Image (tube, rainbow, N blue to C red; front, side, top):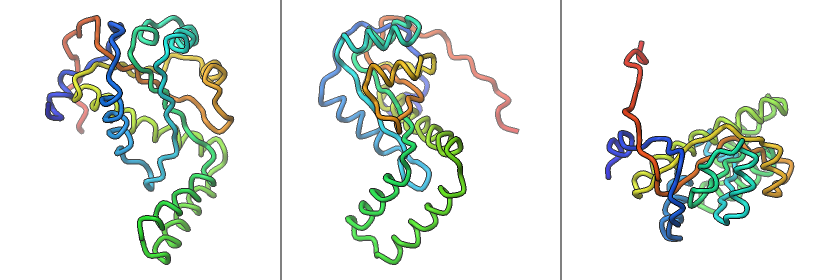
Length: 197
């Protein structure tokens, strides 16, 4: 399936069959998500993948009873990572590992550090949260390209998610993507035709 077909066929499935996606396909989907662009390439987010039924049911309760959670094969919880200093250090090591010249790495890391230092905690959280939505787009299209359905979700209690998943303070659940085999049917796509001005 090509990208435009995936875009046309993808929709927000509200109910799944419960059929399990193979580990191989989940690994492919994770690769697609990993390839998503992000600001500076820093990827200031983490993704918790949930497949066990008990946890999915707890997440459903924390998502106001939305059945996508318990009927999906897997739930991808995209979390903004506000521990940007640690991430920046890890990124520097990654660049050096890939044999980028040290002076170039130092200059680039300095640019990023200046950018991050210009923001307070709230701005960093907002910035990191925005990056999760870019990765989410890859999850939605990647799932459809692999032959599966999905649903992006913002309707959940982030604090309860943190508790259920045992997430550290620096990870803030931002957006959810449920993935599986749809048990419902899409409505015709409705899109405005005046987006470009």
